[in-house]
Image (tube, rainbow, N blue to C red; front, top):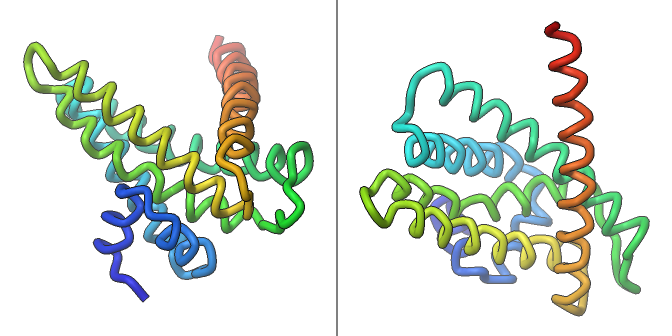
Length: 174
C-alpha cells in the first residue's frame, strides 16, 4: 500500500493503478478529504492572498462541493451512463475524486504576478484531467470518452444544483 504522499504524486501523474488502489481502500477517505482541503487553501491563497475568513469559507465550500460533485458523478456514472463493468459506491467516487483535486494545490501559483492566472489555469486543466482518470477508474470504464461524458454531464448537473442551493441561501438571508 502506498503512502499518502506516494498516492498524491501518483494521482497527480494520472496513474490509473494509484486510482485503483485508492478506489479499493475505504481508509483513504480521510486522505482524500485532506487533499481537497489542501487544494482549496492553495487556491484561496493563489486567488486572494489567503485572507482569513474567506479562506475558511472557501475551504468549507470546496468540501461541500466535493461531496455534491461525487454524488452527482456517482448518479450519472452508475444510473445514466454505466458501462458493462460499472459497479461503484459513493465512497469510491469520494476517494478518487478527492485525490484528483491534488493538482489544484498548484493554484497557489496564481499569486505570481503577471503569469499567475496562466499557472492557475494550467492547474485547473491538470485537475480536470485527473478527475477524468479518477472517474474512469472508479466506475470501471473501458473508455476515457465515457468518463469525459460523465464529467461533463456531472458538471452541468453540479452547476444546476449549486445555483439552486445558492439561490435558496440568498433568499433565506433576505
